[in-house]
Image 1 (cartoon, rainbow, N blue to C red):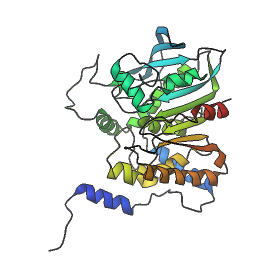
Image 2 (image 1 turned 90 degrees about the vertical axis):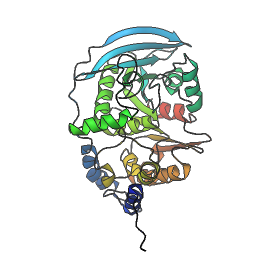
Image 3 (image 1 turned 180 degrees about the horizontal axis):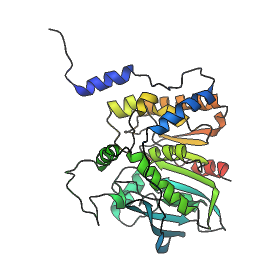
Image 4 (image 1 turned 90 degrees about the horizontal axis):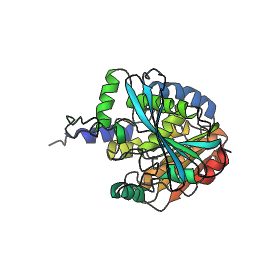
Length: 347
């Protein structure tokens, strides 16, 4: 009897194994400029419509000092019908304006809190220790202003949490539900989150402590997704660090099911793979962190992604603008090159 495949997942895996994105950067391609000019517009178009910009109406809620770092909490409007809590960390010493870093969080129950150094309970402290996660605090200690908001579905913008208490999702991932809602309206979760980032960045750049000409972005995991797209869509960022978000969509996405609605856009994989998407940043200075023992973004696939990005940066004529922190660890911030990388490119 002829063997038949009744598994939809096997079908998608077979489709991915045969798929070559339209703008995949081919080995030996020497015309980087033509490739980027052709690929970038349709890639950005996959994001769909963006929310319209609104006045921020910022409210300074609190100021405090935590282990020498001055911290502020603001509330501000980021799009029609939506506001966000913004935290800003200021260096303990020296005089501003300072180089400034947007610090995106990854998936997890706490949103921006561990990233920005909230170590107020055992759960957050364990989260920080597991992922070396408080880069928003550590980079402020190193002399950078850092700032962060939660993306939709995390931290204070998790609809299951306090002040919202929407629990009728039945345990379904809010990232996927928001993606469904957004695409019904011609948007994506990415376009909405990126619009919220722009609103936060617009406001942060009005602060006297911030040097808007020295702006960088960094983030772990899903924060690496947001770092990549923030740098692609907002040319105010002069350098980026993508932490543990290097792989191939055939592998980490379709095979391993390690992605969600906040990371994707319709038609995106038809156009590019993740190494191509990262390569579209060139010649922007880019630091990539890969954990040898990362269980979510396996090192075999992650290093293949980096190899392809390396070829694109070489073709751009600026291979010196790409750096790798290949560290001994799991899904975490390597932190070995970050300070020197941003000091070099933002000073």
